[in-house]
Image 1 (cartoon, one colour):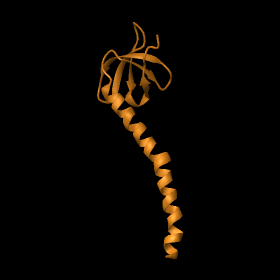
Image 2 (cartoon, rainbow, N blue to C red):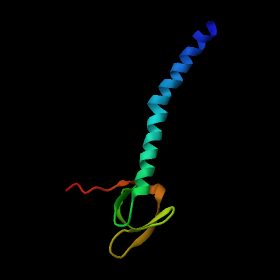
Image 3 (tube, rainbow, N blue to C red):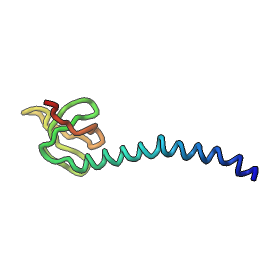
Length: 88
């Protein structure tokens, strides 16, 4: 019985850490992965550097992006922060 009383606070602490820190972080990572997989040609995205660019082609681990009318570049999928939604 004494062992249970000593271990119980640690179990509660671990449970609280799971529901407050670990679970929300995993859910956010899952939503971000789903968003990346749903991106298609023509979508506008915001990079982790703050650039707003348009996707020209979807590759396995990269996007071919259009910065302006003349400039294209490859962007690693890990560098996508979010999908850009016009706020007009």
